[in-house]
Structures are given as structure tokens and as C-alpha cells.
Image (tube, rainbow, N blue to C red; front, top):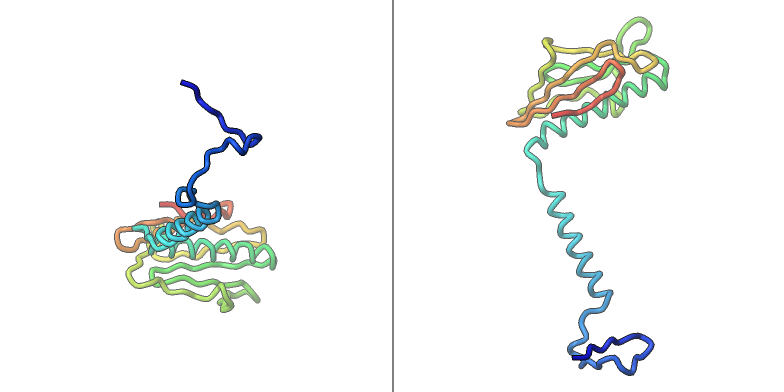
Length: 164
């Protein structure tokens, strides 16, 4: 049995297919792949994790603490975050006293309903950042919501991380 190999150099030898058997064009295939990609992205974005509420609260707190640390460095002044079971807020040290920060993103925030917060042996915590960005103390902030449990760790170096 002989096998025939068709090459582009001999187009007259290529088999002729009827119009109904030609297949899909590249554009049609790319449109289908694009639609599948959109559908899968929609599914991924709507899927929720079991620790979504606690994780979101922790991520928001960690981002604000990191922004406060960076602001303390940029403004070369002492700034602090206080955290209580009811919520958290931000302060700056001026004229020998603590003054609340009321500009975004440093507005005081209450925890969402169903969120509970615990600290390493304390009922509340205040961490001050000096002008070099170093915190007055390292702390672990444990945030729970429903069955989910997440921890915001503030290291002695000023590094802020969210862990499970």
C-alpha cells in the first residue's frame, strides 16, 4: 500500500472537499475560545471561598496598616493603629498627644457583623510606627467570621502578612 503525501508545492494534487466539509475558520475558533474564556472567568469570579469574609476583613486591615507604616516614613512622624473588638482606627502624634486621622484610607472602621477579633493576650492593641517604619510591638490579630479564621501578623520589622 502506497501512502501519498501532499505538499503545498503541489496544490493541484490536494484533495478537493465539498463546500459543506471544509470545517471552521480560524476566526470562528477564536470567537468560541473567547466565549469559553469569558464564561470560565465569570464562574471563577463568582465562586466564594469559605473564609471570604474573614479573609477580606484581614486583607483590608493589613493593607491599611501597611499604608499607615509607609505614611509614617514619608511624613517622618509617629503614627499608630488601635484595634479593639469593636473596630479599629488610626492616629498621629502631634504636640505631645494622639490625634485621630480622619482622611481616607485612615478613617476609623467598625468590624462587620459576625466578625470577632482576638489578640495575643490583650483586649485591645495600639501599635505605633516611628519615622523609620518600625512598630512599637509585634502582634498577631486573629480575625474570625463564621467558621473561617485568619491572622494578620505584624512583625517587629514592620512587615504585615495575612495567614490562615
